[in-house]
Amino acid sequence: MNDSTNLNSRLLAPNKAIQRCIALIDELGLDPWTHPVLLAISGGADSMAMALAFHHWWNAHAEKPHENSTRQSLLKPPFPLRAMVVDHGIRPNSASEARGVCSRLHALGLDASIATVGSSPPKGGVQAWARAQRYQLLADAAAPHDAVIVTAHHAGDQAETVQMRLSRGSGLTGLAGMQRLTHHGGVRLARPFLDLDQADLHACLNASGIAVVDDPSNHDDRFERVRVRKQQAVSGLAPDLLRLARASDGLNSRLHTALEAAMSGQMGLSPYGWGWIDHTAFTRLPETARHALLDRMIRSMATAPHPVERASIMRLDRSLLEQKDVTLGGCEWRHDHKSHDEKSGGAGGRILCLAEAERLPHPVAMDGLRPSCLFDGRWRIILPPGMKAVIEPMGAARFAAWRRKNPARFREIAAPARAFWRIPVIVSPEAGRINGVEALDGSHFAPHLKFNIVDFRDRDYGLPGMAFIGCRLISSSNSFKERLRP
Image 1 (cartoon, rainbow, N blue to C red):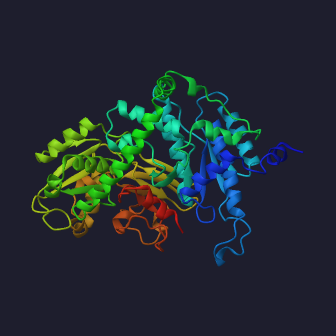
Image 2: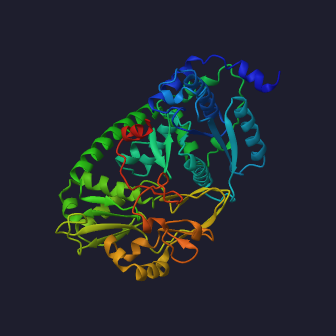
Image 3: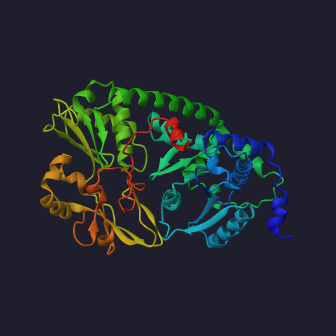
């Protein structure tokens, strides 16, 4: 009997901890019959417990009676349970560790793969760098399949996050902590175990015989999260921080629901990458609502790596009330007094929010093996399999050329030229063979300048999918859950 058989023989019946995890997963509306799932696995006890819980969850759904006629011919869910192990290359033995983790995942029946980070770690900020690289690879893998990324974050992780954000002066949004359902890089992200203690999650592994990897960085006091974790073990603050997160999340959700109702038709986010707020409507909002609106706009621009501190939001608010142009949070805030129509601003004009135009993002090379990428933190680009391209920012000169060719179209869009400098242009020798695109020349095209749509992967344009991240506000987990339902 091989190791895989030995392992599977111990996994016939889920224990109580696994049953609880399955219930938490089901609460999110995930269903292997309708939605592909991609598990983020490190090999540690947290993520291996998650893998085991999802193994039983998938099997439980596979055994359920089919709910409609379209499933009658299927013996098992159409979407296999997929997992990805990211090799950051930080430790000398990381490659062999990743292979070992993959082997254990295969024994669980998971379709597991390894993604290797292509760049070297920096001298400082290693954990932040590793997190960014990890999520980029996960999102790039999930996007072409519209898969939901799932992580093993638990209540202890949530308490640490809230304390770290509290120390930075975060507002309601930051203090609400991590969300159970959200988006990252245009891909859906689920954290089903945020209300579960780490010990309860680890109990899934009892008697399973599954080996786990112990990452030394989890005990290294050089990292803030490790220091916070040790402080909480002594202070006992974790329960209070979790209560703060729940209260902040509830208040934040109600605030944004009221804000969206109050600002209906008075603000907007364009698929071209800029936002606007009616100045008169903005000045009539209470201070707390104005701060929440500005914070949400900055997040939608995806220009700030961390939640903007409350003091910075307050400075921005004062400047905008005084109709002063300002740069903050990676955004240019400009007052436009020329637009007086009902769609783009009332008599007081509008406030424009643009990603800093002169800080152009670096080009991204797609070699045909990488079908998806996130450009400038805001556009999810998906290319046909095997297509090679370089994604570049439009830039001032290229946009000026397009504007000369399309003066009427530019007037229709009604935004300053600077608003277009950071939008993506796909550069590929195959561009001329894709129907329906507006080519800047023989090899450059920008689909979003041709079709004013957010995501056209399901439309018959012969185009790769491109989605602008943050073009609509998601105020609560319910809206995410509704999207998950078939």
